[in-house]
Image 1 (tube, helix red, strand yellow):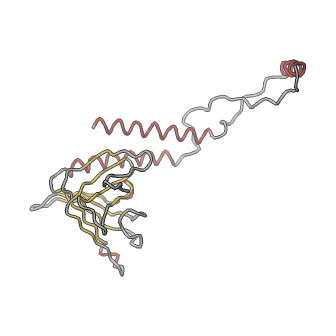
Image 2: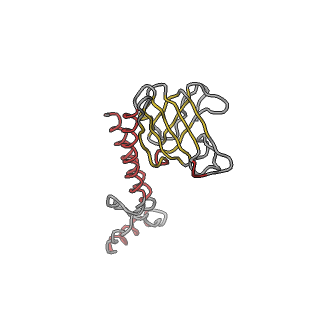
Amino acid sequence: MLTRDGEIVPIPGEKILHTSRPRVALEISTPRELQIAEPFSLKCDNGIAYITNERVIYLPARPSENFKSFFTPVLNFQDTHVHSSWIGPWSWGGVVRPVPGGGIPMHIPRIDVKFIFRDGGHSDFQTKYEWLKERLHHAQELGLMPGQNLEPPPPYDAAPPESAAGPSGNVSASAESRNQPPQPAPDEPPPDYVEAQTQAVAMRYEERMREEAERQ
C-alpha cells in the first residue's frame, strides 16, 4: 500500500485523479444497527484523501502502528452524501464494505466512513467521485456482455497443411489447390478474439477517462 517514504503504491494501471486539500479528518465507526460484539471505531485528525481510477484512499499525516492508511474500491461506497454543519466544516462519506488490507477489520460486514474537510474542498471531492462512479458503472455494464463483439472479427485463414518435401511436392500441392473450390469464410471469430476485443475496449475506455479527468 505504502512505500517507506509514505507514498501510495499504485496497483497496475492506477492513476490519481484527485487529491484533497490538507487537514482532512477521517472518522470510521460501526453502524449502530449492527450491534456486533466487537465494534470498531477510528479517528484521524489530519491527512489527505485521494481518488484514483480504482480506489478512494486516505493517508494520515502521521502514520502510526495502529493506523497507516485506509482504502476501498470506488464502487464499494454506498449511500454517499455530503453533510453540512453550522459551526463546523463540511463532510462527505458513506457506508463501506471492508476489503482485505483496507484498514478495517474483515469481521465487520459494513462500516460508516466520513471525511471531514477542515480546509474546504468537499464539493470538488464529491464532484470527482460522482463523475468517476458514473463511468465505472458504465464500464461495469459493458463488462457484463463479454460475448458481444463491438466490431466485426477480421477475416482469417486456417493454416494450410504441410506439403510434401521437394519442388515436385510444392508444384503438386499448388496445382491441387487451384483445382479445389474456394473455402468458405469462417463464421466465427479467431481464437482469443473475444478476449482481445474486450481488452481493447477497456483500454480505450480507460484512456478516454484519463483524458477527461485531465481536462477537468
